[in-house]
Image (cartoon, rainbow, N blue to C red; front, side, top):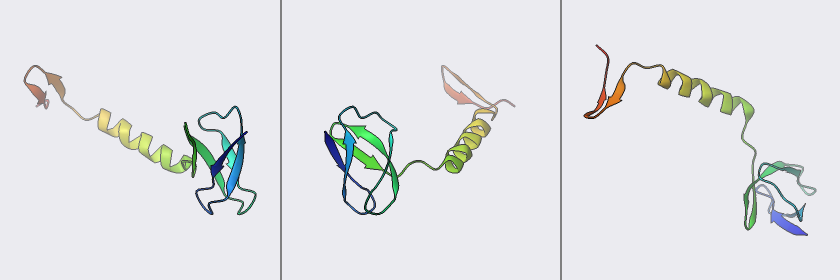
Length: 79
């Protein structure tokens, strides 16, 4: 059985013996939801907000659509 600290209140949370990255837990002391972000040692952090992740993906798509390409001399913009 393994324990990890709640990122909000510092209480020990029982994460079991077969923890997985991204596994979610609710702190019994404060009720905050956290997820496993590291396995050795097990570390919890606040989960990534889905709305925030969606915003990042949109920005990444926009950056990928900008003109230009890599060549032997580096990056050149299409003219």
